[in-house]
Each structure stands twice: as structure tokens, then as C-alpha cells.
Image (cartoon, rainbow, N blue to C red; front, side, top):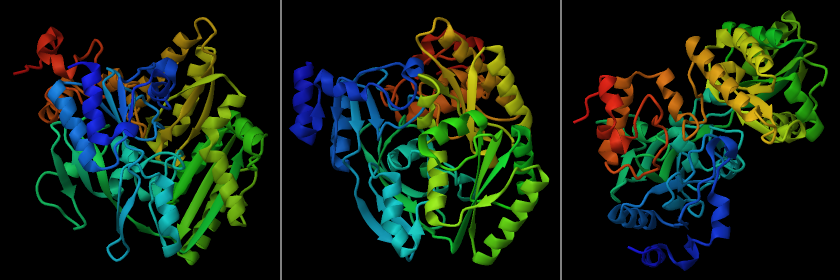
Length: 486
């Protein structure tokens, strides 16, 4: 079928104003929030902007009939290249599907469309005493559908858990154009956990068109503490001591000196620029428990040589401290033209030695590295600062990033804590999984998408370790690795 005929069919499905194919319009969709130097630019042939689940299903059926690749996309805030049209084709952008369809405070859930901005749901429900707990740093822009695809985390996942802990059910369009509903409001759902399969699958086996999400009660009281330390080691030791004391903060974040400098220059959030590291700690719950935990945390931080411990005294002060943390990535432009963000996780007790190793890797490769991360659960975000136009610098950046991943896996961690795999890390999965593990995952993907046209070239390795899902039978290396494809 010609491109013109495909456009006609897409236009009939979603309307002329919802089909984009002008090269200037498509420029916006060539990349997501990942570093374009790492993930590259890939232009889709068409971008469609459906407004209903039925329109999504019809677009998928058209794509299936013509064997055209489909790439689901939310707000494009992903950091691993997961929303890039690696093989062109049709990009299904869900940002026009942004309605709150139902709010049920009695059973504590809401049903929303995938294009709804994460923060907008809490803005809607907080006056009634409820909020949506998962809060990625991009929550002012990212969509709930994208959060589901990547099983996104955020600063408050230490206490409240990642997205998967807050998804009760999903409406999903499968790669064959059929629509299913998984899960529901009941505490338990019999059969295979299809909701669990979908959450975190990065758009490779279905497109979410509705999400039933859990609503959480707004806590009675909240305290936000800021504790600067002379060194990262001292701050890391305080993190372990706080958790060892049986305290579960809502959030426990760390920023190093380089990050503090950038954040303060950009936002004047109140972080002391002479500190080696800062902890941002939030405690919530019943007023008496919050007061008791706050007192304990102050004592622990001082015992671990905190320069001071400041408790925010107003909502404005709390908001400013959090603004500095959540907008830290954007502040890096004051330090460098480019940065490569790693997203790894290690056991919390391994934080001090891991941060020392990150520093060593930076020195070995003659690169500056800023650290801002979820210290409470060991989810690291080293930002490798560089200039893409300096000869040889990108190669050093990629080498440094790979060394970090190897280290984190070796100490019992993982190659991603919350940003997903996408294009960026698919060839690093072999650090964590055996050929048999990967074959099992590939088999699941293939059962939903036998032609491998749903978000192709994402998640699954395509380097020396593994072949692409749609060509497993062609790659002798799988047989050499003991994987027998039938």
C-alpha cells in the first residue's frame, strides 16, 4: 500500500487533524528525553493522536494488516529511548486521551486515560483528601500511560512503591487490535496476572488506553528535613542508619556538591553550596509519629556529622526544597552542554563504596560526574557531564557508563531502577540475565506480537549476545548459547 493510501486510512480512523506527516511536525517526535547522542533520532512516518480507545484499536488493526511498526508514546519524557520510532512506521501519541473517567473515594480508585499528566490527578483529588502516590521527577509533564509502560518510580517510592503498586487494572489494545481489560477493583484477581505483565513492558506487548489507579489518603502531617554533610560517605552512612533505626521516610534523597552548585545557581532552593552532600528527607503520617521520627532523624544525622539539620517550617519552604531536587537534571545545563544519565540500583548498604567507585570511574575517564538520586532505596542517577563536540569525549562517556553498570550488577544491583531499558540499555540485559532467561522473555513478547512490530528494537538485546525477536531462527548465536527456537 502506498503512503498516500495509508494516510487516507489513518485519517478515516482518527480524523484529518489527528494525523501528522509533515517533516517539520515530525521533528518533535524524533526523540524523547534521553540523550539523542546515545539513543539517536528516529523519525516516524506518521504520528496519530487518537482521542478514544476505539480509535487506537483501529489504528493498530490497520498497522497489523499492513505490517507497519507501531510505537506508543506519551509525553516523551522517558529517559531510555523507549518512545522513539526505531523503525519508523506509525507513532501512536496518546496525549489527547487525558480524561479522568471515574473517581471512587469509597473504594479508593480512579479510572483515567493514559494521556493524563501524573500531577493533574493529585491536583484533582487532593482537595478531597487523596493523591496518586507515584511521583517521577517529571510528574508535571509525564503521563500516567508512560508511567505504566516504564513502571516509573520517583522520590516517594521508598515508602509508597513504584507504579506497579498503584495499578489495579488496565484496558489494553493488543498488537492484533483486540481490546482487553485486566485486573479490577477487587483485592485479588484469579488467573494469570495480566496487569503485572503489562506494567513495565514498555509498550512492547500492548497500548494502555485506560488505567484503574489506586488513590492514597493524604497523610495527616508532613515534615521535610534538609541535612548537609561534609562528605558523601557521611551522608551515605546516615542513610543506612536511618533505615536501620526502623524509620521509613516517605522520601530520602541525596545530592552531591556538584549537583548542589547547579541547583542553587538555578533555583536558590536553600541548599548550602559548601556541603559535600545533602540529604532531603520527608516524613509523613500521623502527627505524633512524624514528630517522633523527625527527632530521631535529627539525632542520627548529627551523629553522622551533619553540618546542620533544617526542618522546613512552611509549605512554601517544603515546595522550594523539592523543586530544587526534582528539577536538578534541568539545572545541569549550567555546568555542561550535555550529560549522560545512568539509572542503576544497588543494595542500600553498598551506597558508600558504589559512590566511591563512581568517583573513581569519573577520574579514570577524565569526566565530571554529578550525583542526585533516591538514596533510601539505592537507586542511583549518576550524570556524566560532557561536550559532544569534543573529540573522543563521547567514547569515554559510554565506557564510563558501562563500567558503572558492571559494578552495580557485581555488587548485587540492577542496570535500571525506574527509567526502563528502551533502546539505551537493551544490550546490557545480558549482564543480569542468562540466555534462557532472555529466551523466556522473548517468548512472552512473541506470543503477543509474533511479527515484532509493537515498539520494535526496544528492551531485548540485539548485540553480540542476542538476536532480535523477529529473527531468532536466523541467528545461529542463539543455538550456540543453548537456546533452541522452534
